[in-house]
Image 1 (spheres, rainbow, N blue to C red):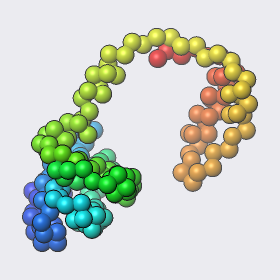
Image 2 (cartoon, helix red, strand yellow; image 1 turned 90 degrees about the vertical axis):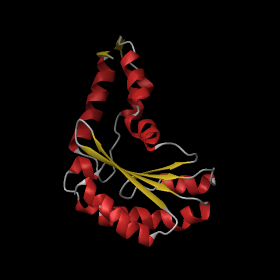
Image 3 (cartoon, rainbow, N blue to C red; image 1 turned 45 degrees about the vertical axis):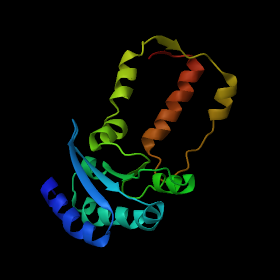
Length: 182
């Protein structure tokens, strides 16, 4: 699904379904693929409270559902933009909802480019990582840590064989005091 088609859906379906809510869209090209940023402007907290779930459900149904590329499908951002602060409970509820997309509440007016820079591209974070000095780190034997990790059973449904292998490697490294370069 291309950006023109998505803009068409926004201008027809979304504007009709959610009167009084502003919709904008940015299609981002990254090294590994494409990302989608939906910038939703809401004037009142009550409007946000009543509509945020329906908006994200409609994004998932009408747009995300049409995407076949996995990277692209899992890189959907929905920004809810207000000119004032809202209750911390509502903000927490929205931002911690894991269905379909990453949801972020912006409590001040910012440009689309500023929002994308701050919340998706994170260039400041890249600079901090590049400036870190790398040094050799040697793990020291720690009986307490070894006792706590020995015998752990990974129990979540999505635990893969790779996770079990990594846990076994950590235990071996602690026992032998392996030297790491960081």
